[in-house]
Image 1 (cartoon, one colour):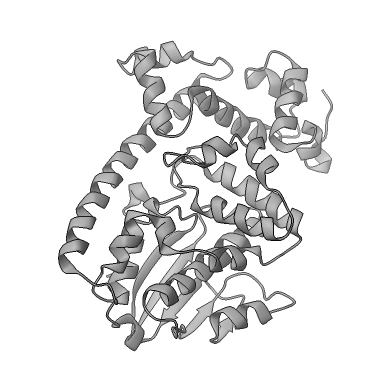
Image 2: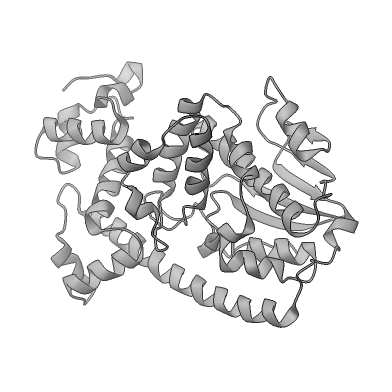
Length: 355
C-alpha cells in the first residue's frame, strides 16, 4: 500500500492564499541567496514577511507567498538550479520535532514514511508519497498546482530531492547514493550539478518525479533509532497535525466567506459574529496561524483579480468594481504592490483593455 497523506492534509488541496506552510525553504533560500550577494529581504518584505516575522517560530506562509519569493530569487541570482543549492544546504534540525522523529526511526524506510506521513509539518511545498516497487522503495514528489510557474516548479522539485539526499547522508550514512533519480521536467543544458549531487543515474522528461532507494538502503538501520523516543515523538506530531487542521479549516472558511461576499468585504467583527466568537478571539486565532484578517482579505482579492484579468471582455474598471476596490486607482495600487507592474501587464495580449 502506498504511504501518503490523508486527502484533507495534502498540500495544494487548500486555497493557495492559506498561510499554513512552515517557511523552512524560505529561510534556507535567504541564506543561500546571500552567498550570491543577493539580499532577499526586500522580496520577503514585499509579500509581508519582514525580519521580525521570519524569526517567529509561529510563522506560516502561503504557497502564493512562497512561490513569489522563489521566483524572484531565481531571477535575482540567475541560477536555474537554485533549488539544488537550497536543498543541499539543509539539515534535519530545520524540521524540528519531525526531524527528531525521523532520526529515532528504526530504518531509513521508516524514517521516510514518517516524513511522508507528517509532511505538512516539515514546510514541504511538494506532495510526497512513497511505496514499494518490486524490491526497491520509491519516494515521489508531485507539484501542488500543475499551473505553477515553470521556474518555481523546477525549483521545488530540485529542492525537494536535494534535501532528501542531503538529509539521508547526514542522518543515515554519508556514503548514501540513490539507485536512480527521475525528474519530470526537461533536461537542462548542464546536467553536471545533478550528477555531482546525486552520484547516480539521473533521468529527465520522466513521467513523474521520483527517487528510487535500493533494498539495502531502505532496510538500513538508522544510527539514532530508539523505539520509545520514536513512539512518543509521533504522539506529539499527531497533536501538532490536529492543531494544524484546525488552523487550516479556519483560514479556508474565512477565505470562502470573503470570496462569496465580494465585492463587499465582511468586517472582522461580522466574521467573528458568524463564528460565534469575539473580534479579539478571532484575531488571536489568526495570529496563531501566522496571519491577520486583513491579510486573508488581501489574498482573496488578489486571487480574484488575477482570475478576472484573464477574462478579456472585462475592463479594469469592471474588475475593480467586482473585487470591491473603491476605484481603478486603488486596484492599480494593489496590483503594483502584489506584482510590481500595472494590471494590463498581467493580461494576455488579445485581452488588453484599459477600461
